[in-house]
Image 1 (tube, helix red, strand yellow):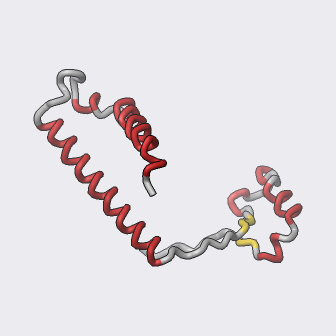
Image 2 (cartoon, rainbow, N blue to C red):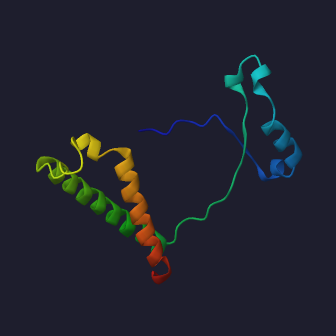
Image 3 (spheres, rainbow, N blue to C red):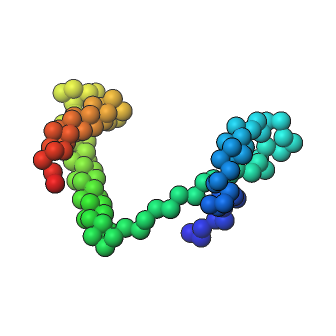
Length: 121
């Protein structure tokens, strides 16, 4: 899919020296303009360093782990549904997969992972 052109004006380093005008334009009330949709927004550019080869490798490795985990979770959910293993606690699979159940599982996983945070190097 082709990248659409940006309509935002990016601030240059020279423009960023005038922080007062940038702050004032950020607080400007555009509701009084004739066409608020055509308002100019000033964005301060931030230089982000490129990933090193090691970081690119790490990112790819971690993304693959996430993809495998999502795939395995999907397989497990499918088996839970097909075998109706949710029936002891929920009347429907949809109820079983409700946001509350998924949130509780996420909270448990985050809690477990946070215990190991200091051990991972």
